Image (cartoon, rainbow, N blue to C red):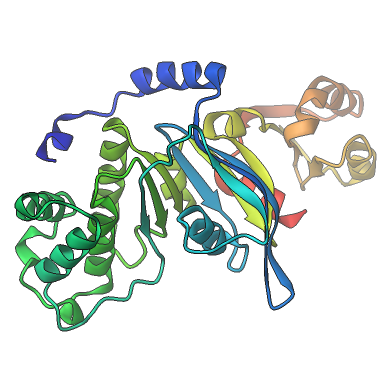
Length: 318
């Protein structure tokens, strides 16, 4: 496992491979029309997704959106009421799962627990010690191998949960809030480990409430809200598909505010600026013409892409 650290993250290599994946539509799992109810209340409603091979799919959504339920269905811990999870081939991928809430036997040491899990994962007895040492080193817990689980902090437990998910060399990792409870240094270390795993050929589905984390590691995103997938896209495309322009003028725009906003619902007029979001960005020339005709001086035109935070707020508000 130590050879993981020899990989460097080469974006160009990944991007070339990802283009090929798009053309061939290669996926590990296909989630088709999943529905799940709890006591008559829908947790998931007709969820359809593809989990692309050798990439990182980030699942976003507010609390109660259905992320954990979806993860448990992917991991085989829950059965959907309707719909199915279909592998890309006749053989199911090995799946490693790290739940959001981790429950460990407090009196066991980290090493004892990992050995128990290695037995349950079917790792041969002669390979267990080496595998456990390598995995604990990979997640930064080798020095705490003799520590009782009940004495481990939340951040340590997250690291142990990731190490446990890696037992048995799974092809697909399902990680529910993998950095929750970690300090900024620990968060960075786990995110780097996740990048390394993709370079090693793993496919990862993860959830996070930290949009900056998702932006830094995920190749694709899907947003759940009230049990439904309301948005899915490649991260680069998501940002490029929502350009915006901001036009700054020399004085208050109150006299023509209503006129400008009547052209498109994504034209937003502030005191001395006009924001053209996504679909309204193509109206830039028309808006400029109106401003100049009305005698306004154009001080600056700023063009930029929308952030993931802006996309998330926009689609969950709908």
